[in-house]
Length: 136
Image (cartoon, rainbow, N blue to C red; front, top):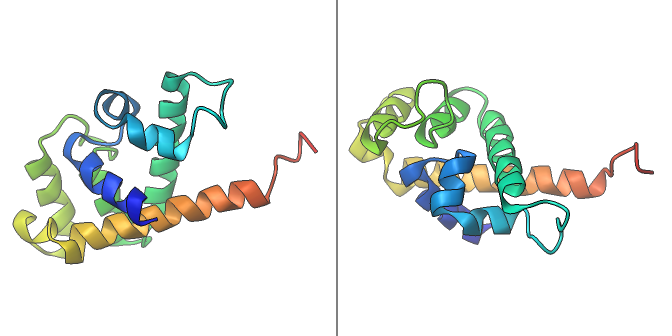
C-alpha cells in the first residue's frame, strides 16, 4: 500500500486521467492492472480501468471533504482536468480550509493519498473476494 501511495503522490503532478497515466505513470497502470494478469487487455484499456478505479476510490475517501479534495487534486473533478497543480491544490485546500502550500504537506495531501491507496486496495480485494456472478 505504501508503494501505491508513493506513486499516487507523483500522479498528483499531471493528474490521474487515462491519458496522463499513459504519458507519465505507466507504472501505476501496471501496478493496478498488471499485463500478465490482464493479458486480454492492451495498455490503453488497462489505463482506462486504472482511471476508473482511482475515480471510484476517490469517491469513497472521506465522504465529505476528502472525496472532493482527492478528485480535485488528481484532476478528476469537473473543471480540474488540465489545470495547473497549484490551482488544483488551492481548490483542494479550500475543502480543508488551508492554503495550497499547507495542503501539499504530508498531513493533508500525503494523508489523503494514503487513504486513497487504502481505498484502492480495499476495492481490489472486494473484486477478488466477490467474483463476477455471471462467470460462476
